[in-house]
Structures are given as C-alpha cells and as structure tokens.
Image (tube, rainbow, N blue to C red):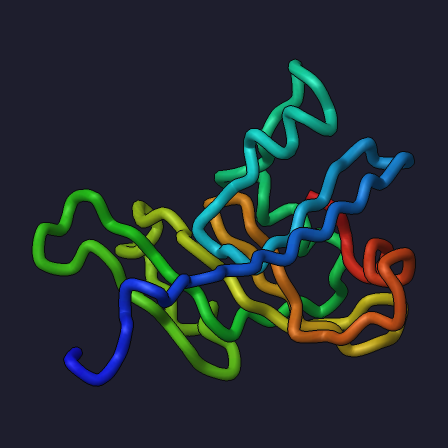
Length: 150
C-alpha cells in the first residue's frame, strides 16, 4: 500500500491455557484457546514421561455418569464408503434413527444431554480426546465433578 507502512505491522496472537490436575482420578485436564493442539509437550512438561493421552473410545467415558443420557448430535466415520465417509446425525434423540447397517461405523463425536445428581447437563466428547460442555461452572472444582471422568 502506498499510503501505509505494512512492514511496520506486527501480528500478535495470544493463547489462553488452563490446566487442572484432579488428584483423586490422577487426570490432567488441559483447556486451550487453540483448538487444534493436543498440548502433548505441555503435558510432558507438567507430568514428566510415562503419561498417556486419553482418546478414541475411552473419551466417551465422560458420559458414563450421566443419567437418562440422550444423544442429540452424533458424527460417524465410515472407512468403507468412498462417497460418504462422514455423516452427522442431529435431532432430539438420534439413537432412535440408527439401524444395524450403521453398526460398522465409528463415532467421531457425541453431544448428549441428561441428568447429573438431578441437574440437567449437556456434554460433548470427541474421539480426538476432547470433551466440552456449554454449562458454565462457578469454579474449576465444581466443574471437575459435574460429570463423569474419561
């Protein structure tokens, strides 16, 4: 640009990272504003070597403590179908729409609602090892017990 000095511009990116170690379950929870990272180096710096990332089917254990669980959004991956490798099912209870032909597909994510200790909760989990909830927690301690652990 003739009227500006773009060489003097500098891009600054800030990232927020929150760590919480649950001593009872011996789990390190890491939340970061950068959604594409699994923070492996950060976890190793905090825990040392010998730790294990929870991902795949084990991530869905976070839904185990939820009563009357109703899945409302489920992503499925199909490695055998060339033209439909991914499908997403959304509705008030998507499990009612699954048939036996979909049993061979693997889950990429699940969003569900239900009850935890009588309170309505919503929680989502992904095979990548991430889980999240739109619920606002008054503190980290309360949130860590709000749902089951992976």
